[in-house]
Length: 117
Image (cartoon, rainbow, N blue to C red):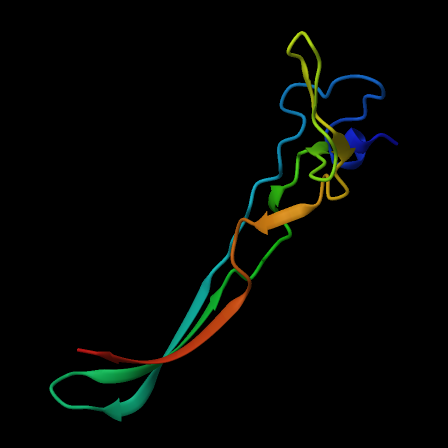
């Protein structure tokens, strides 16, 4: 299995990745709110409500993926020949295809007390 196909960039072996083959899946989110009125009157038509908010219920592992197949080796030597050609020391990226940053936040629950007029 090639590094490109392992990272979800198509199944071509010994070939370039197809156009748009390395795009990530879409990020989804689901937020819920539950509000329950309390039987306590605070005067002049206002009342209290207990709220429960749940954010990002369907959190996913979707995010920005490391797409750099090779990196410049900071410990290697840069070579410049007499014609001005520069050769950089490259190494394989061990984190290629892994998740760098999530696109959405983690699951969060918030409990509140709300006064409505």
